[in-house]
Length: 264
Length: 166
Image (cartoon, rainbow over all chains, first blue to last red; front, side, top):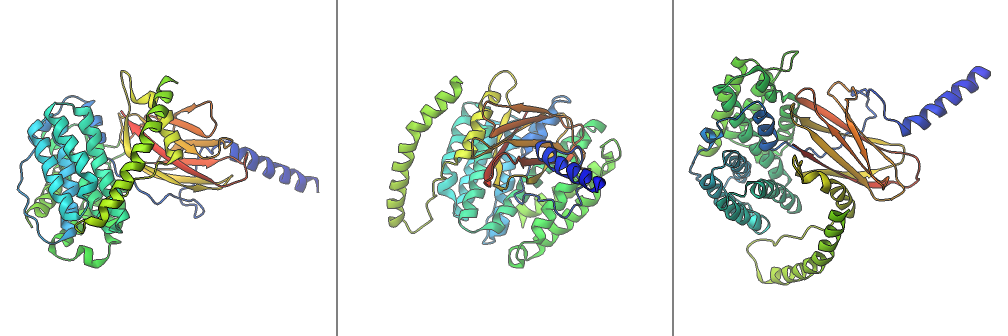
C-alpha cells in the first residue's frame, strides 16, 4: 500500500516537474511524439555563411547566365522559380550586381507565368534597385521574402504541389553551388555541410507525395532518381565529413539535374 | 525597449495604410481578370510578439539574420511539439517562441538527431509567454526543437516560432 502510494506520488511529481522541465533525452521513435508538419528548408545563404567561416570562397565562379525557355509545364516552372531564387542568393554571395539584377527580372517573368507576380513584384523590384546600390543586406532579406511570399501565395491559391517544387528547386540550386565550391577546394571540415541526408529524405518524400500529374515525364523521373542517388551519397562518417569522391559525385549529380531542368 | 516602442509606433501608422491598401486592392480585383490580386497577410500578433523579442538580436556588430519562414500551431497545456530542422556547424542559431496568453509559461529546447538535448543558452524575457534559445550545433545535421506549454494555465494556446542564423 505504502509502496503504491509512493509510486503514485513519484509519478505525480514526475509529471509536475516533467511539464516544468524538459527531458534530457527524447525517444524519437515514440509514436506519441507530435512532429510539426511544416518544413522549413534552409536557404543557400545559411549554408554559405558556414562555409565562409572557413575562408573566403570563389562564389563568382558559380554565377551563371542561362537562358530560360518556358513551356506549359507548371511543375518545371515552379522548380525553375526555386532555382532562379537560389541563383540570386549565389549572386549576392558573389556581390555580382548584374547577376542579381538579371535574376530579379527572371523572377518577375516566372512569377507572371505562375500567376503570383502581384505578390512578388515589389520584392523583385526592390532586389533590382538595391542590388544596383550594392545594398546586399537588403537584397538578402528581399530574396528570402520573394521565396516566402511566392510560397504563401501558392498556398492561398491552392497550388500546394508547386510549393514543394519551389522548395526543391531552391535547395537543388544551393546544393549544386555548394558541391561545386567544395569540389574545387575540398576540405574535410567544409564537406560536412553536405551531410543533409534527412533533408533529402524529406524532399524526396514530399516529391513522391505529389499527385502523379504534377511529376509526369522524363524530367521528373530524373528528379526522383537523383534524389535517391543523393540519399546514398549524403551519408557522413563518424566525424561528420563526406569523402571527396562523394562530393564530386554530388556535384555531378546535382549539376546534371539542374541542366536538365533548364534545358528540358 | 526603445526599439519596441519604435516598432509599435510604426505598426500603428502602418495598420491604417494596410486597411486602405486592402480596400483598394479588393476594388481593383473586380476590374482585373488576369491574375488574382494578393490578399494582404493579416498581422499575426503572436508572431509579432516573437519578432519584437528578436529585434535586439538583429542589429549590432554581429547581428542574426532572421528567416522569413517560421512555424505556428496550437498546443494544450502539458503538451509538447517537435520541429525538425537542418542546422549547419559553425553557424549560430537563435529561436524565438511566443504564445498568446501572457500568463503562459513555455519551454524551448534543442535536441540532436539522436534525441539528446544539446547545450544551448536559454533566454527569458519579462513576459513569460515569450522565450528564446541560442545554439551552436556541434555537427551539421538534423535537429529537433522541442516546445512545450507548462500547466500553469488551462486553455490551449496558439504559438508561433521564428528563427535566425549568423
